[in-house]
Length: 541
Image 1 (cartoon, one colour):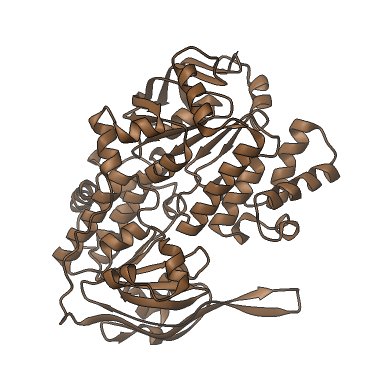
Image 2 (tube, helix red, strand yellow; image 1 turned 45 degrees about the horizontal axis):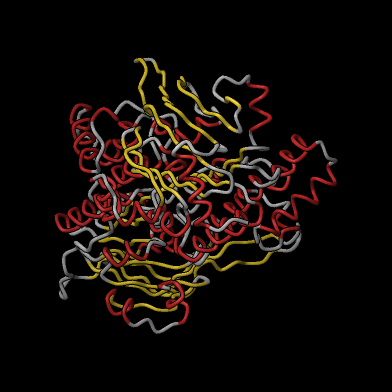
């Protein structure tokens, strides 16, 4: 197996035309065709990926990274292609669909950005892995099943034989990502395209997924094309990197050289971007807005038709949020962070207990009808913008829904003006008003979600991974927006995230969760400097 340096040197030779590349892209342009005409989203892109190389394609949200990756296998809907994409010397852009189906999954496999959307919710994950093996390798169902279980074990999915029969919704985010990796590796591809494989995963699971990809790549010698906005991941993983902006490649080269001495100002801006603390200090005399005591949430789990047990997702949580304060909530996937946020807003589907007082009002005692009157002041930005935004509504209809309900005196024109102003605040222009969620990138959809929640100026906003899908430069813009809204309207945030740099920049106080409980809490600076618990030290490490 070649060393990382040898692979990088060979990749550099390919880029200079001195060696044949496994994948060669030349002058690739992609236009999306709609009712109003065509829009160019990728413009004359050229890159090479060698055998055994780890190549990263980076850039801001909407820069064309994912479209470029999908174009390799012609997976973009309503797209027109120009240029050349050659794999092992074969032209893919002009290949018949039947020939291309033989390449997809067998020679070139893909890990998609949102595994919950990419996995079929109606079939167990084992069946979905077996389908690819049976189709491309012509083996029996029994052989495919054994191979699928081996792949799940190889990707270190807990209890692979039992998880073989699990449906996607029964797995955590990290487990779904492992299932996607197992599916992609089913036919031992020569090239693996990984589109944001660690987005929305907590720090410890991120590390395990990256280590897994690195190990599998070394074992099989396959090439990896990594699509990401996570620059620290790129620096530790990739042999070479290319930077995209507005559909074009602005710079590419060996990873160490590009990070140490970037030639383009845009590349330097990306490398230098990191969350910066911009929140105002908390007033010690700020009144309590939310006070929760012994809060818990549990769900019934059926071992059989006649036997039920209770799973405690959150238990015995005490917390206090002052007006204008940001409370950070961190912990691994499955620690109960998101369930806690839903429980505080009385949106959890499980059986809840404890006392929750909002501005003196006992939320735990309110009827469903009385609770609806409180919704204006209690808003949430959900973790997965793709599923939380209605695909049948325009951005205008999505964002104006809250003010149409809570401010019925506003005219349609006034609502439209309010929505346009809000979109501008979160970094989208008025041209987005009549478009649908599927027409936006993951980061742009997250900004729409923030606009929908913030337009009502709630007193308390629960933010469930609000920046997980955002690139580093836009992330800082959103954090500054949240900070300015908080200072202007004295909004309080419960900020749930796996990104410790974001928590350090945004939170006044932090709680650390594990197995549904708070294991440590404290003022942000103190907790980061002197964590008491071993679990907290592991997260920070």
